[in-house]
Length: 234
Ligand SMILES: Nc1ncnc2c1ncn2[C@@H]1O[C@H](COP(=O)(O)OP(=O)(O)O)[C@@H](O)[C@H]1O
Ligand SMILES: [Mg+2]
Image (cartoon, rainbow, N blue to C red; front, side):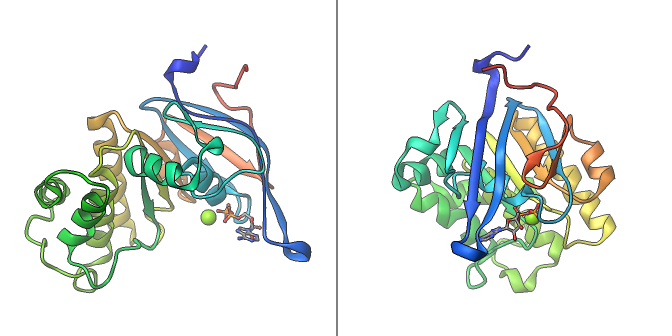
């Protein structure tokens, strides 16, 4: 049985409604989940089942209405917005389907500037090291528009990993890429996570990618469908 100290993600009975009035949606309906440090998890399920929202809750980008969210030892749902932003900066890296790079910044600046804003010493040196680690040492001064989709996603991975987060979250990271490039990006995510002991949590519609994770969590209509391998006992 998983002890509390080993869990890096602990959600207990989390509920969340998004939107106002007639257009409000009860997106998460009592979700409980524990993820061990270093474990990789695929979140799967139909479109609209709450997968992205679940990741946003774990990243502290959505605040829950009910339940507790404990990430890397911090109960984040009780924290102020500033505290949550600081938590996110040190503990969570995020990779999106559509890369979300800043178009008027070079690859190097896309990785270095967030580090600089977070007060890291030597952000440009770290950024160069991280971009080299994803094979982009020859692309440092390129802008996102001058890079292929796979290259843009590698910049996003370098940016996400640069602060050495405990958790790497990836929402359909291969969804906008061709099959071969998607495979290379997936290989990179798994390799980087394993190398650093990072807990990887990804959403995917690709059964082959989901099967590569240590564990799959299936969502349906805002609930986790099958009992998680490490069900919460608290
Ligand atoms: N800001 C919002 N306001 C209202 N409804 C939302 C909002 N964000 C998401 N939803 C709804 O919540 C449900 C789950 O969304 P999402 O987490 O994006 O699902 P998935 O990633 O599984 O496709 C969907 O029905 C979606 O329309
Ligand atoms: Mg989604």
